[in-house]
Length: 257
Image (tube, rainbow, N blue to C red):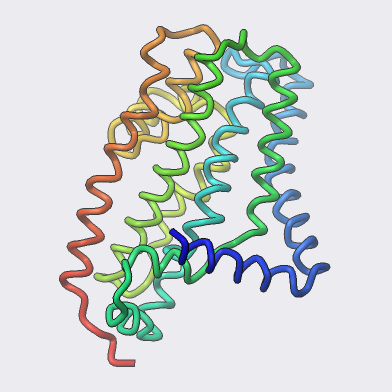
């Protein structure tokens, strides 16, 4: 971990070399996610609720997904750049080093500018709490923290799957963006509003609903208490992700570049 934090400090120092560029990049990321939620705000000005959810409840919903994706994109973006690592034969050098492969790839690319989205998510959470989105208790606060941390872990698993598939294709599969970048877009609403088919897909196959929809029902007082434990179940998703990654590493053949 000491090596990882050393690389993190290097990336932060590099990003802050051009401070204006850094802050403009942060501002650009804020505009993207801010505009996404503005669409929800404008919709709620015309309709009182969407799927039975008020604006503070939707802000709570979106803030959890935004915080989870921001953490994953900030610290696990190296796997998103994995096709370039393979094409340029950088993975050969990574294999030759006496360090964890996952650690080295994580250190390849860190995006500190994504922390601006995390700050936006925190601001939205504070507003949602102040607006009375839920009747808060210590248990509900702990569940909210679980939703964010476990959500970041699920997105990390998706990045890992994306990288593992590159061993077989040598190019990134854009279809994975449906579950990574796309999840940040359609996560502005509880997944249940998209229909039962989508809800069960995101519960049983890619467990995004386990860190958003189901525990959200508990936070809003619409579901039983055990819904609040479902984010922990989402961590099981990491097992097949790691297995696919290891299978890809075992079958890796150098590109010869």
